[in-house]
Image (cartoon, rainbow, N blue to C red; front, side):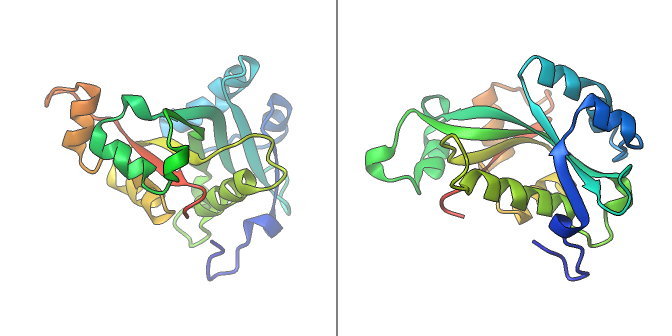
Length: 202
């Protein structure tokens, strides 16, 4: 999704693994979300050392100390047998009957952040990062099978709109349906919504 203003992330940025050395060389990343900023400044490196997640950075090619965006990925699977019937049908609808199973390989977006300086200006950095990830896991060079991209997205209108405009769909149609599956009472907050993107269908 290259925006109308011509800001093409592939041309304007260099993508690389986000290591402690990269973080030390670059200016501190800030997306003005306290949870995300804290994760990328501290926890991302622990996740990598424990083999729990791998973070990638997009560095401004013209200003190599500026991080435009970061994403943390991890292997995952969608376990169909644990999903309520109507949601399971929604997920499996595009899968050939002969290949419908109990588990589907997926990649999890653990965190995604865009520098506050590049948000809301029509650059669509976050959408372009998602486009890259979609292409990456469809590529013939990809070394594992992966059918879905999944994310536990913050349950707020801005975040949900962002993922839905990029083709992600909620596994559960309503918050009540998701609450019932998770066993949450009406008083307990539903902090995230589970969304999925079908790499074959979309």
